[in-house]
Length: 164
Length: 159
Image 1 (cartoon, rainbow over the protein chains, first blue to last red):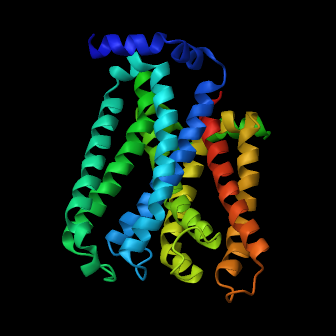
Image 2: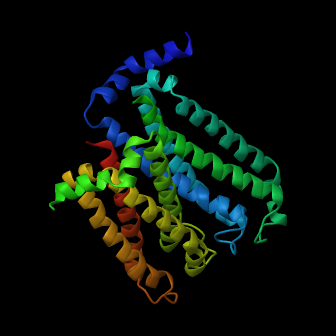
């Protein structure tokens, strides 16, 4: 089965049909997706700003990161669930949508960035935890993260404009 | 001039016309509006979660609030810059529906709470504001700003 065929199958599942044809499902999912974004992206932005030496500079980097992480994951889980359901309802259209492809690519980059950050410079966080301005590698990771998330949001907002 | 004529006039202004006729002008302004929303909501959420005692317990409320105030204000600035531009382009839709008045109502309440009550609670001496009142302020602040965001988004979704 090709990816396109898979998308066609997704769209024609009872779930996909129901969301596409129901009067309120899609708008409701959009709203839920927005709340998830506000929580996930909002908390990520605060952590990224701390990594860039801005925002709550007087707090330990590790405290800002670890106390906000559960909220980021909660927001992300809400986004992933509502996002997946929206994909079900219009998979074929999204398959051919340039901005959706950009969004998937940015999601991968953002994930890799977090993974690399946690396996390298963040392992030595004890050494720079209290510094108002973290080391260069941490600042770069913060900048990449901010850029990716802004790009994700922008690409997501642009998706419907390409269908018109 | 009645309200309908005013809305039509809004859409004919240079800015309103530009957004309606130039490809991608509308989504770009909309994306900047969403960027402002994140810049505003991130700080608002953090300070409120701190007021509820759910995050950053080792940092004082005032320190959290002061650290993010600049970013919250930048978000508000971006929102107030792009919001009226979006209104000019969608004036007819806005004045003919009930969502826009709801959004403006919630916005006014949210702003008053933010700059009258919230500021006082975050900078009050520890223990001088009751725990129940603090929690009520924090929860209503999150709810109000989410309400503003959701009603705004809904204006774009429904015709």
